[in-house]
Amino acid sequence: MIKSMLFFILAGFGAGYFGLIDIPEAVGSTAIMVLLCVMMFVASIEMGKLGFIKDLREAGLRIATYALATVAGTLVSAWAFAPLLSISGKDALVTASGMGWYSLAAGLVFEYSPPLSIATFVYCLFRELGAIFLMPVLWKRFQVPELVSLAGSAAMNPAVAATAVTGDQAFIFYGMISGSIVSMFVPVLVPLMISL
Image (tube, rainbow, N blue to C red; front, side, top):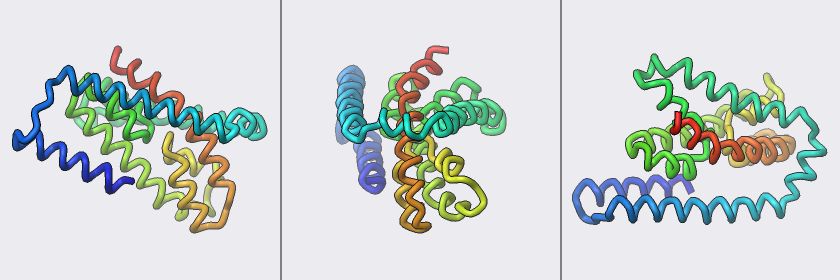
């Protein structure tokens, strides 16, 4: 999936750079928003099928607390590190609000700033890839819910990878719930940070 995303990004960049395809800005923005809404609808159907509410009740407040701490920690860290990255606090918060959901976040940021949309995609992608490699390495030093927080909204994919390496099925359970909770914040936080 990641290879396919990178391929289409590079192909689109090349088509735009060399003038091979010219899409009017209004048409491009509308198409992106329509496709994002369809994607969110399909993802919501899948979450409903998986019995998300029942699983959340069984996990109790613990996993919800970790998920909320993930959101808060991401935003505080982005704000704190913004000066070191030579970007405004607002742009850092907009980028970090993607929480690892590269497809949705990059699309939401596109109308605000195409270059920041690319930065958001890269940040979210590296957050997921970093979690895939770090979760199995740090497995014995930290609890599973803490490790799942590394991935933000994309927790399910790294959780599957961590389960395959460690054999700990708790990664999948916490990854699904934590990732779903954090994902709910992305469509709200990104536009909110853009409006600041």
